[in-house]
Image 1 (cartoon, rainbow, N blue to C red):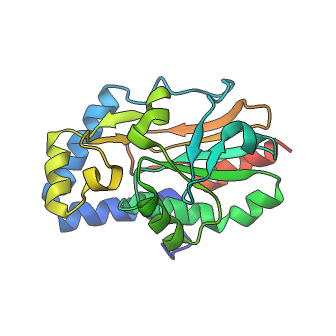
Image 2: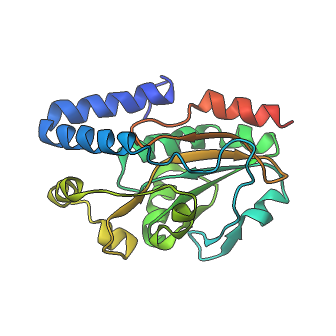
Image 3: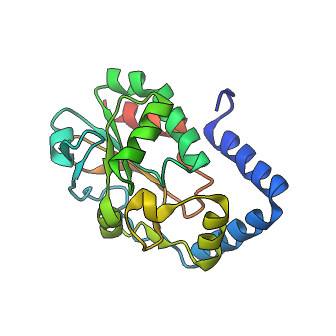
Length: 218
């Protein structure tokens, strides 16, 4: 989290550590990602030039936040994270926190969307020092409407249970669904100008690409 390397290089360090320290988990993860990639998971999500579908979701304080309301104040970066327990999500969120002032000076805003109860979204927000909203997408409803939801599969479910990751408690749901991590840069007109969707949750939109998209909107 503290290295100055590009985001995806830092995420690769985590992936390598997991594969080395727990080969069984590494194999399960690789097999799951191969399944999702082969199935083109996330391919139907909105693309560049599409209008970002609206949302109305509660933030970590229970206040309802809408996309239309955010867009009235300028462009919005919408990022989907899997949960507070996910090390890749934590590192990618820290990377967003590092640029939150620069994004704000550009007249844009960041909003994170997670399928977790407020208690757990608050944990991630507090741990990373974020000042932008963390919204709860209960039962992955909004992510599902975008084609971003995946079933973790029985192997991953067993791995989570063995690792003490209690998705049913975090999400208040027994469905074992997660969003594909994704990032959308949305212009003030509601049109997507940049997006990153990858079923391999070990990779995310590079911060340099995100900032470039925001500067292009000026």
